[in-house]
Amino acid sequence: MTTQAGTPEYISPEVLNGKYGIECDLWSAGCILYVLLCGYAPFSGEDDMQIVKAVLSGKFAFDGDEWADVSKEAKDLIKKLICKTEQRLSANEALQHPWITKYA
Image (cartoon, rainbow, N blue to C red; front, side, top):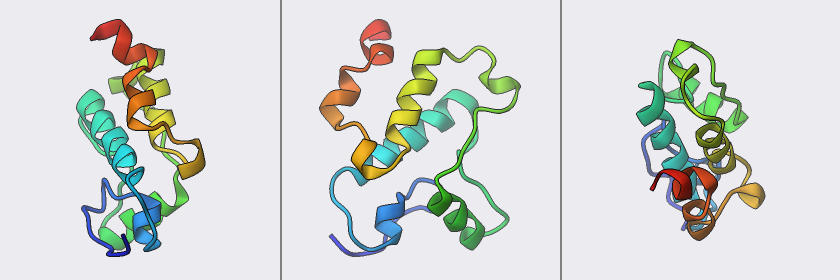
């Protein structure tokens, strides 16, 4: 897998770098979960290039009133999906995460 394809708000850094595996989908799942819980993407910018730079930095936050009632477990799952590849949960690990098992 070497093609750089995806939506800037959900694309993983390894896809942008042109060398990735299935773990890139877990990054995207973390971004989607983030959006579902607060209503906006974890990485933003005025254009695609700024969004890509934000994604490559890997820095995001749980700022804003939208996060006040979101559980620690949900935030923890997001942090374990939107992170460096070697630290990222696998799909099976994500399904066993306390937020999933507690609320499933």
